[in-house]
Length: 254
Image 1 (spheres, rainbow, N blue to C red):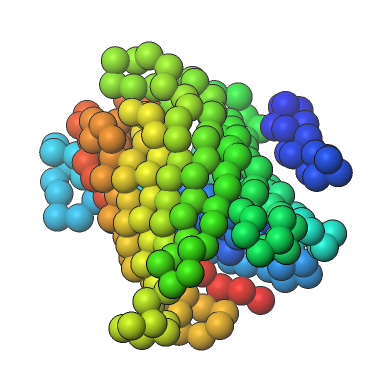
Image 2 (cartoon, rainbow, N blue to C red):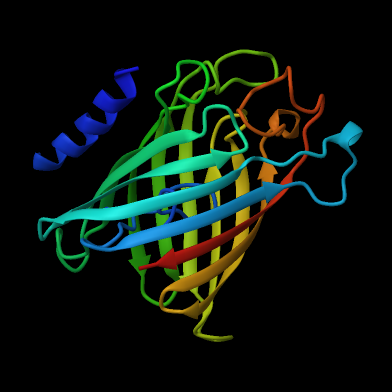
């Protein structure tokens, strides 16, 4: 019960040495951090489309996430928050992130972030415990590139053979699309492994205002057989086969 809390504490303490649930591109975390003294709420629905249950139709529980900017130390910032997945018997998980600012390494330096998400207190129920490190760099008008690595709880992160597959690369790219409209955003990301977290995802976002954005994306799993809903890797209560999904995300700052 105490291990996830210790994990979050360790992430926050290592800061002495960074708009979502957590701040993310489509599926992987981004290096963005909620500004100090502000809050972010995200509502995410992930579901198959036009599928029957016997060929993989499923939906993840709705994810309601709240993030808060906890502090601003000038060259790095901290955010933390919780996710509530409903309906699920063990809905509450935590996330936290520390990231440097654009000024930390000068004009040509990257932004660095470390964090954790889906950190749960119920053993073998919601303790997926993804821990990651990332770096990102925006290159002129081309866009922002992100690269990182993650690892998590091998009880949940398995491949279709039942073997642990609990770590891998994170890659991402995103940019505003002013050539079309200043309110339009495009993102694509990749998360390694052949677990239920491993996927290539892409999507578009539309900013209705500075504080409200809607994102629509498509998730193509590295092993479609593992895409069966929540909890990840569950082969007893979910569909017998997997299927790729759509994700709809609403983000609000306040």
